Amino acid sequence: MAQAKEAWSSRFGVILAVAGSAVGLGNFLRFPGLAAQYGGGAFMIAYFVSLLLIGIPLGWVEWTLGREGGRRGFHSTAGIFHALMSRPWAKYLGVIGFFTPVVIYTYYVYVEAWCLGYALNAITGKLSVPGMNYGEFFARFTGAQADGVALQFGLHDVGIFVLIVYVLNFIFIYRGISKGIEMVCTYAMPALILIAIIILARVMTLGTPDAAKPDQSVLNGLGYLWNPRDVATGLKNPELWLAAAGQIFFSLSVGFGVIITYASYLKTKDDVVLSGLTASAANEFCEVGLGGLITVPAAFIFLGAAGVAGQGTFALGFNVLPEVFVRMPGGQIFASIFFILLFLAAITSSLSMLQPGIAFLEEGLGLGRKASVALLGLVTGLGTLFVWYFSRDLKAMDTLDFWVGTLMLFIQATILVIIFAWNVGIERGWALMHEGAEMRAPTIYKFILRWVTPLFLVAIFVMWLMKNVAGWNFSFSQPVFAPSGYVLDLIGAQPSPVARLAIGMIVLITAFALVLTHLAGKRWDAAAARTRTPKGKATP
Ligand code: PFF
Image (cartoon, rainbow, N blue to C red; front, side, top):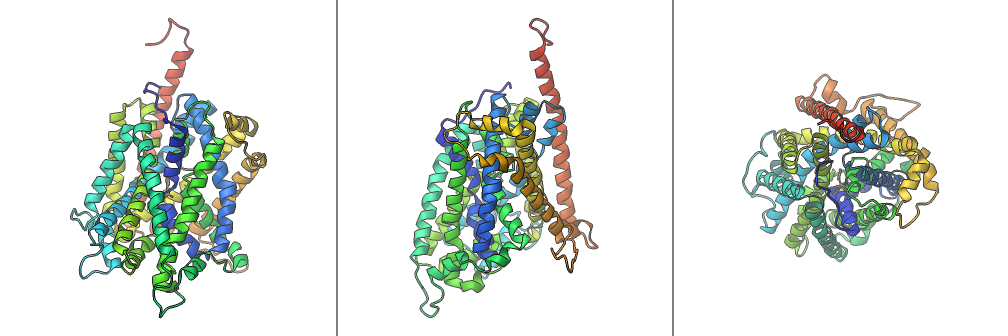
């Protein structure tokens, strides 16, 4: 395409960038919350099965297709599908790869702003204001209390932090692949791992701080998360499988269209098999080895099982942990660095959600860097404004996360693996994947990619629809169908205007993406026709 060629400056840099995308709030908040909720052991079995059958193979698919697309001069999912499949409709299959990261960015960045706000407030020792407990402060700060309350700009309001994270994200994305994304990840990733290790050391040496409550010890805290409870029953619970597979997607950033874009900036002969595996391994280290050992044990030691059970992802991080930190020796410092850690983890992920959009606008519409950054800033800014204003019960965010952050993911992931294993063809795909490879993937993965991953994905997706849309209780003997709140919000007796608006926003962005893809297709076809036209007869 017409743009100057961008590339990662080193192999280590791209691995750090993909790991940076993967390591995020999912590792330090979402994962421990889910593992605790589903009773440790059984969840971990389903989690590792999903890692082996979905996470790692889909990662390889994205790395391979991305590098191949990059060779042909394309960096967006739509462009890459168009180049690989040479069918007029192929580019439309890639629309989700533009749309999903853009929509997720609109609310992920909002949570990123909470992290920055909490970090700065923790440093100044003001993680709450007089007369409010942590929960009340959280509700006020994030706007969960009422619509519109978060649109304020004091030090105890999220407003200023939303602006700061927007400016930071767009400055870095404007600087490009190696000077922006790679540079941030080169500093942020080691820093966040170091901070996590320091906090882990603090938590692991807490012992039994309250002699009157001998049960609340480090060991019991770890046991609460990790001791297998009712493994057999757990594994029969479809919800546990949905949660585990969903976490693998979210955490590894696979299926979003992000890794495919990152991999398209590789050099032609760069290895993808080992790099993909290394990035996944780095994510698992941060998730299971660090995230899984910090939040829940820390909360358990001070608050006991009752203080941890049933806490959602956000409550665990933003209500429970501040309370835990004040009870801990050196708590103010540890609270500050913990929220800095979350912020660093979040920004390396949010940057990865912007790049697919930038790539698409540049190569699809021929826009320059400035124009594509400005246009994407406008679109995502409007989306974030929506999430920020309609913050009551975090409804707008929750609705977008459900329909886009989960539903669209299954669809995009299934499309990716089918294109790789069936359209490109497993033999050719396998050969492409191993070009320049520094290790060979086990041959069993040919079979897994062809049959197991797609079937597993479809099975999980059908289960997801049955549970969340049709509301089946998974009982054959006494089946009950009660559509979930997300569906009732749209078509129930008392629909939620905010949920409906969120769907309206999704439809609008989809339409926008489809129109752009159509225009991009025309541009690409014209460019292809020009190269086919014999010299001298080229159209102007
Ligand atoms: N993997 C990130 C996390 O664990 O927080 C989240 C994420 C990043 C989701 C990039 C989607 C994405 F495109």
